[in-house]
Length: 146
Ligand SMILES: [Zn+2]
Ligand SMILES: [Zn+2]
Image 1 (spheres, rainbow, N blue to C red):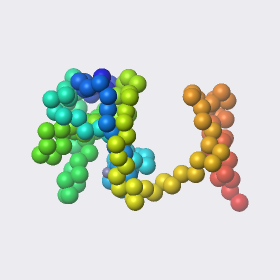
Image 2: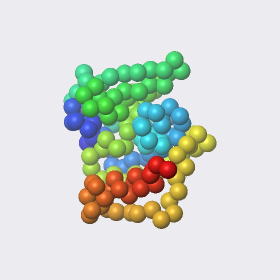
Image 3: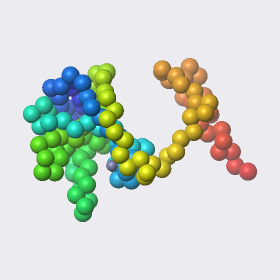
């Protein structure tokens, strides 16, 4: 299976048939992903190949060693080699094709901040029929000033 960043500069190939994935809810992954958790796979180095764009990868490393790598053009988080281990960390959202993924673990669940209320959630397979204006109206209706 193949994957790429948002702009397509950085692409890669995984020589695997299915994915075992995890979600990490730690505070660093929340910042790095911009959402409630990272959703990622750990792929043996022998099954991972960069196809393009390695020169476009930006790096940021915290003192603790936590590393974020991202496309310098579009900002997508991109695969990075695990410190001292023969594996790559791969964000699942970059994979292009439909993925048969087993969720193996949720870690740092105790750090989850965005506790979501799913009661009454509207579930749509595509963008709402009413278009962007209706979407915005639904999401902003509770923010009327008093
Ligand atoms: Zn990109
Ligand atoms: Zn994390």
